[in-house]
Image 1 (cartoon, helix red, strand yellow):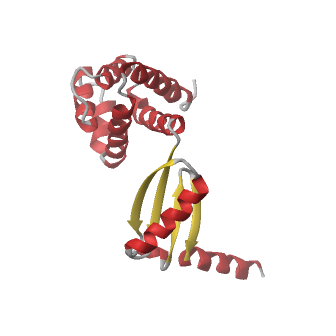
Image 2 (cartoon, rainbow, N blue to C red):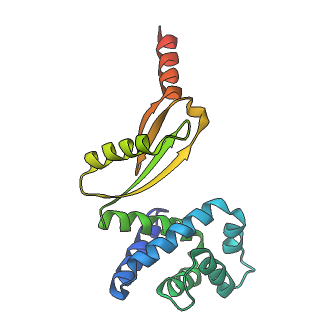
Image 3 (cartoon, rainbow, N blue to C red):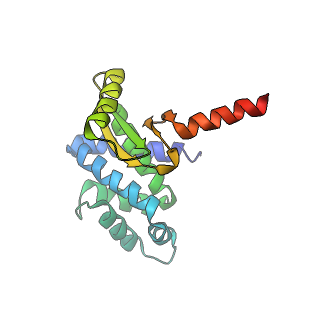
Amino acid sequence: MSDGLIPRRYAKALYKLALENGDAKEIYEQLKRLNFRYTAIDELKRVVMNPYVPDEDKGRVLLQATGAAPGSSLDRFILMVIRNNRAEFLGKIGLAYVYLYRQENNIAKVEITTATQLPEKQLQQIVGIVKRKLGDMTLEISHEIDETLIGGFTVKIDDVLLDASVKNELKQLRLQLVKK
C-alpha cells in the first residue's frame, strides 16, 4: 500500500468520526499543532518510532503535543493507529486530515513572505488581492519575513507560489543571460 494511501484512509476515517462527534474543528486545530511540532521536534518522531516505548506512552506524548484531552476522539484514534503498527504514518495522517478539513470547509492556507516588515496597510492590500482572487474562501493567513528576498514578496496559497521578489527577478535575469 502506498505511503499516501494509508494516511488518506486514516484521515478520512478520523474526519468521519469527528463529524459524528461534532469535534472536527477541534481536531483540526489539534492536528495543526501536532504537525507543527512533529516537523519541528525530531525527538517527538524518535519517541513515536521507538519500539521500546510502550504504546500508551507514545499516545500520551502525542496527546500532549496536540493539546487534546485524555479520552477524547483524537486520543482514542492515536492509540488505535499506534496499536495497528501505523505510528510511522501519524505525521502524514495529521497532514492528510488538515488538508481534507480545509477542502471540505473551503479554507485556503495563505503564507505571505516579505523582505522586510510591511506597514499594516500594505499587508492588508496584499491580503485584499488574495481575497478577491479566492472569492468566498476562508483564509488562514500567516506572515513571515525573509531578508533573502531582498525586496518584494511571495504569496503561497496552499501549494501554489506567486513570487514577486527581487531575488526571483535576479534569478530570472541570470537564467536569461546564461541562455544567451
